Image (cartoon, rainbow, N blue to C red; front, side):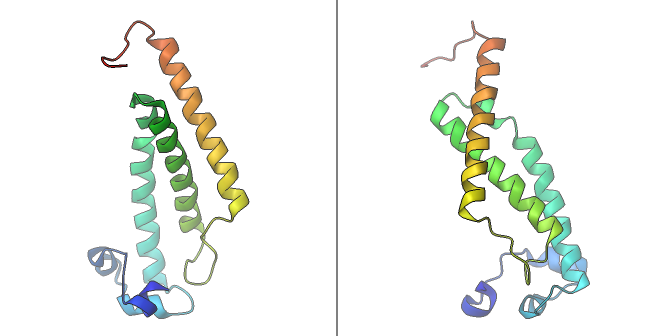
Length: 130
Protein backbone atom coordinates (compact mmCIF):
# COMPACT_ATOMS: atom_id res chain seq x y z
CA UNK A 1 0.00 0.00 0.00
CA UNK A 2 1.29 3.43 -0.92
CA UNK A 3 0.28 4.91 2.43
CA UNK A 4 2.59 2.60 4.37
CA UNK A 5 5.35 2.15 1.79
CA UNK A 6 5.55 5.60 0.25
CA UNK A 7 3.74 7.80 2.78
CA UNK A 8 1.24 8.80 0.07
CA UNK A 9 -2.46 9.43 0.51
CA UNK A 10 -4.63 9.77 -2.60
CA UNK A 11 -7.85 10.54 -0.75
CA UNK A 12 -8.51 14.27 -0.32
CA UNK A 13 -7.84 15.17 3.29
CA UNK A 14 -10.94 17.38 3.44
CA UNK A 15 -13.06 14.38 2.36
CA UNK A 16 -11.52 12.27 5.13
CA UNK A 17 -12.18 15.02 7.66
CA UNK A 18 -15.78 15.51 6.49
CA UNK A 19 -16.45 11.82 7.13
CA UNK A 20 -14.64 11.81 10.46
CA UNK A 21 -11.97 9.46 9.12
CA UNK A 22 -8.28 9.72 9.92
CA UNK A 23 -5.41 9.11 7.52
CA UNK A 24 -4.09 6.52 9.96
CA UNK A 25 -7.17 4.39 9.34
CA UNK A 26 -5.61 3.49 5.97
CA UNK A 27 -3.23 1.18 7.85
CA UNK A 28 -6.10 -0.83 9.37
CA UNK A 29 -6.80 -4.36 8.08
CA UNK A 30 -10.40 -3.30 7.29
CA UNK A 31 -11.82 0.13 6.58
CA UNK A 32 -13.51 1.59 9.67
CA UNK A 33 -17.08 2.90 9.14
CA UNK A 34 -15.92 6.53 8.78
CA UNK A 35 -13.46 5.58 6.04
CA UNK A 36 -16.11 3.48 4.27
CA UNK A 37 -18.43 6.50 4.36
CA UNK A 38 -15.70 8.69 2.91
CA UNK A 39 -14.88 6.23 0.12
CA UNK A 40 -18.53 5.71 -0.78
CA UNK A 41 -19.14 9.47 -0.95
CA UNK A 42 -16.12 9.91 -3.23
CA UNK A 43 -17.22 7.00 -5.41
CA UNK A 44 -20.72 8.46 -5.73
CA UNK A 45 -19.26 11.82 -6.69
CA UNK A 46 -16.96 10.14 -9.20
CA UNK A 47 -19.86 8.18 -10.66
CA UNK A 48 -21.81 11.39 -11.23
CA UNK A 49 -18.82 12.94 -13.02
CA UNK A 50 -18.32 9.82 -15.11
CA UNK A 51 -21.98 9.88 -16.11
CA UNK A 52 -21.51 13.46 -17.32
CA UNK A 53 -18.50 12.33 -19.37
CA UNK A 54 -20.34 9.46 -21.07
CA UNK A 55 -21.04 11.75 -24.04
CA UNK A 56 -17.41 12.81 -24.57
CA UNK A 57 -16.42 10.09 -27.07
CA UNK A 58 -19.20 11.18 -29.44
CA UNK A 59 -17.95 14.77 -29.26
CA UNK A 60 -14.33 13.98 -30.16
CA UNK A 61 -13.46 14.27 -33.84
CA UNK A 62 -10.44 11.96 -33.83
CA UNK A 63 -11.94 8.45 -33.84
CA UNK A 64 -8.92 6.77 -32.18
CA UNK A 65 -8.93 9.26 -29.34
CA UNK A 66 -12.72 8.90 -29.04
CA UNK A 67 -12.39 5.12 -28.71
CA UNK A 68 -9.62 5.52 -26.13
CA UNK A 69 -11.78 7.89 -24.09
CA UNK A 70 -14.66 5.44 -24.33
CA UNK A 71 -12.48 2.59 -23.04
CA UNK A 72 -11.14 4.70 -20.16
CA UNK A 73 -14.67 5.77 -19.26
CA UNK A 74 -15.89 2.15 -19.31
CA UNK A 75 -13.02 1.00 -17.08
CA UNK A 76 -13.55 3.92 -14.70
CA UNK A 77 -17.26 3.13 -14.33
CA UNK A 78 -16.42 -0.48 -13.40
CA UNK A 79 -13.69 0.46 -10.94
CA UNK A 80 -15.98 2.99 -9.29
CA UNK A 81 -18.68 0.35 -8.86
CA UNK A 82 -16.09 -1.93 -7.26
CA UNK A 83 -15.11 0.81 -4.80
CA UNK A 84 -18.76 1.32 -3.89
CA UNK A 85 -19.19 -2.39 -3.14
CA UNK A 86 -15.86 -3.50 -1.67
CA UNK A 87 -13.48 -2.54 1.07
CA UNK A 88 -10.23 -1.57 -0.67
CA UNK A 89 -8.21 -2.27 2.47
CA UNK A 90 -9.08 -5.97 2.47
CA UNK A 91 -10.90 -6.73 -0.82
CA UNK A 92 -9.64 -6.83 -4.37
CA UNK A 93 -10.55 -3.65 -6.25
CA UNK A 94 -8.21 -4.19 -9.19
CA UNK A 95 -9.36 -5.74 -12.43
CA UNK A 96 -7.79 -8.95 -13.64
CA UNK A 97 -6.50 -9.05 -17.24
CA UNK A 98 -9.55 -10.92 -18.63
CA UNK A 99 -11.88 -8.30 -17.12
CA UNK A 100 -9.73 -5.49 -18.51
CA UNK A 101 -9.82 -7.13 -21.95
CA UNK A 102 -13.60 -7.59 -21.84
CA UNK A 103 -14.20 -4.02 -20.68
CA UNK A 104 -11.80 -2.72 -23.32
CA UNK A 105 -13.78 -4.49 -26.03
CA UNK A 106 -17.03 -3.20 -24.53
CA UNK A 107 -15.62 0.35 -24.46
CA UNK A 108 -14.48 0.14 -28.08
CA UNK A 109 -17.87 -1.19 -29.18
CA UNK A 110 -19.71 1.45 -27.16
CA UNK A 111 -17.50 4.20 -28.54
CA UNK A 112 -17.83 2.95 -32.12
CA UNK A 113 -21.63 2.72 -31.85
CA UNK A 114 -21.84 6.25 -30.45
CA UNK A 115 -19.66 7.56 -33.26
CA UNK A 116 -21.80 5.73 -35.82
CA UNK A 117 -24.88 7.29 -34.23
CA UNK A 118 -23.25 10.69 -34.41
CA UNK A 119 -22.59 10.26 -38.13
CA UNK A 120 -26.15 9.12 -38.77
CA UNK A 121 -27.60 12.06 -36.90
CA UNK A 122 -25.52 14.77 -38.52
CA UNK A 123 -23.99 13.58 -41.80
CA UNK A 124 -23.95 17.07 -43.31
CA UNK A 125 -22.19 18.66 -40.35
CA UNK A 126 -18.63 17.59 -41.07
CA UNK A 127 -16.22 19.34 -38.67
CA UNK A 128 -13.62 21.64 -40.16
CA UNK A 129 -10.33 19.92 -40.78
CA UNK A 130 -11.87 16.44 -40.83
